[in-house]
Image 1 (cartoon, one colour):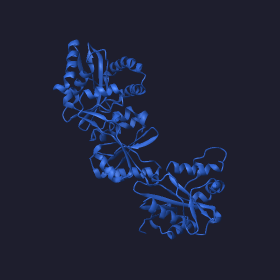
Image 2 (cartoon, one colour):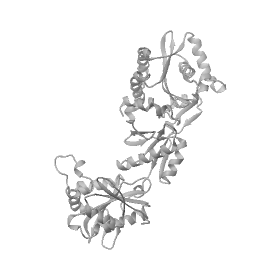
Image 3 (cartoon, helix red, strand yellow):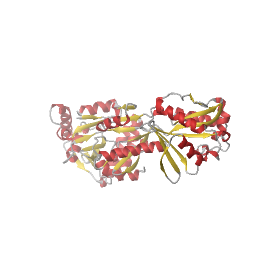
Image 4 (cartoon, helix red, strand yellow):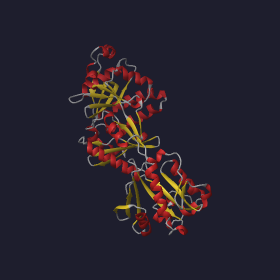
Length: 469
C-alpha cells in the first residue's frame, strides 16, 4: 500500500468499534516502514495485512455497517488467499469480542497471545477534560503549577497555516529526544514530520499550547468511532506541568459530542512511559490478540511411512538423489505438475542433483507440503505430495511418476494410500485434487482412485474425496 492510498481507508476507520488504535489512519501512516501495511476490500469489509519480523499478519476485517456475516465472509477470503499464496495464516490486533468466534472456528489447534506491551491505554474523555476527584489530584496540581508559572499560556486549535511553527517546535523537541539514542523514538520522529502535511487531508484534529507566543506542546488526534486516538503528543519538559496541561486542553478542545474515550496507544514496553500512562488511570487496557490457527501438517514432526500391496510410501532418502532429480527436473513431463523449478532457480548453470531433494525437505520443514517417495521393489518410481493444507482440515494431493513407471497403476495405488493416511492419521475431512483438462491419463486415475468431479474452469478439472466416499 502506498502512503497516498491510506486516506481511502478513512470511512472504515472512522466507523470502527474495536477501541484499538492500530485500526486508524494515523497508525497505518506512521508505522508504514515497520509493518509494510497493505489492504483489500471484500464486500463492504476492509481487510488489512502487514508484515512484521518476517511474518504476514491479517487484522480482523472491518465492516462499514458492522455486518458480522460480511466480516466472516471476509475471513473465508483471507483463508483462501493464504492457501492460494502458500502463506501461513496469522491474525493480529484481534479485539477481545472477536476472539471467541475465531477460536471456535479453528478448534483446538490454535495459538493465542496477548502481549502486555502492545495493549492500548483507553481513558474516559471526561476524566481528561476535568481531572476530577482524588485520583487526578496529582494532574490537577501539575496543571495549577503550570498556570501559575505561565499565566499567559493558551491552547490554540491549529490549521495547516501553523505548520511552520509546528516544525520549529519539533526541531527543538527533536534535539532533546535524539539524545536518548532509541530506535523507536527516532523512527517516530521521522513519521511525525512526514505526517504533518497530511493531517488536514486525513481529517485529523490538532492544536498546541503556547507560552508567550512560543509553541511548547503539540498534539494530533483522529476520531475513530466513539474514541479520539492521540497519535502525537510532544512537549518541552523544561516547562513544568506542560504534559498534563496539554493533555487536558486537547481533550477539552476536541472531545466533543459522541467522544467517550481517549486512546493514547501502547507503551511499547517502555518502563517510564508505562508508569506515566498508568498514572492517568486508564479505564481499560485494550487487549490486542494474536491468533495463529494450525493446519494438519503441523501436527507431525517427520514424514510418515506406510505400505500398500505393491508399494512403499516413505520419506525421500539420500539414495534417491539422482532418481528424484530426474523426476523433478523433467520440464516436459512436469508441465502437468503445475510447477516449473526454473521459476525459483535463477543461476546460469543448472542445479546439481541434490538441489531438488533439498527443496523437498525444506518444503516439509517449513510445513508447506508433505513430499513422499513412491517405491516399488525398493526403487523410486515417483512422488506423491500432500500440499495446500487449509484451516478446516482440507488438503490437496498430487502425484507424478518417472516415465518408465507409468501404466502400472502405481499412481492410483499411492493416492488411495495417502488418502487413507490423511483421513485416519491427520484427521483430514476433505481431500482435493485437480488436473489439466488436457491430461486425460490423470483424470482417469483420479476417478479410479475414488475422487468425484466437483468443478472445472478453462484450465483444470477439480475433484474431491471425503472419508465417506
